[in-house]
Image 1 (cartoon, rainbow, N blue to C red):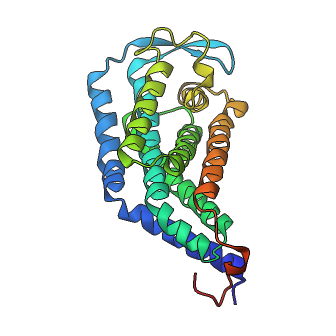
Image 2 (cartoon, rainbow, N blue to C red):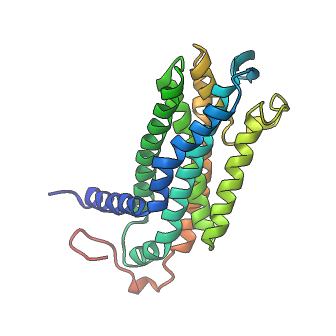
Length: 267
């Protein structure tokens, strides 16, 4: 027999994954938008040498502008999709989660289950985006490129959780995610932003993933520290989102009316 905590987590994770599979718009974006977006960039962006400052090593690289734009396009696509998925999953299930918490379901199970579902979604979307890029050109280290894309997805997954717990309007959340991702991507790419070498871009969510992805695609350098920047953004935003989730699912009933969740009970 499963322990109550394990059963609690398994049930919550199953419902979190089911919520993602019901988001058909996000699934359409994954299957069609990623290859369409990267194919458009491959066709229309000229393969001219472009200077990129790899701050992780201080190198000024001369990279193919077409391939660099595909890297930034992949980051933009996965951050939009995973951020949108986590926002909608958190936003739509908030009322139901509150009823579960009021019935005694452990809040920690719900939070950890959302994170587990997000990690699985981020792995699948990042692998798919990397495979599409690999179809058009040969990155130096595809596995590290996927890791860079994955850290971007994780960072924006945390942002999606934060917005889903704070905002009360789905259009507002979608607008914030789209504009943040577009602006972030544009500022990181020296083709769209000639001032990308200036200070300040280091504080944006996609900075670490962009550095790692470019290093993976064009060099043999592994910026280990920059691999942690995307998860650091996730930790910070998810912590704030957890605090908001706690406030919005708090039980305000008298202590006598509360009952704990049990394996035999029905939340």
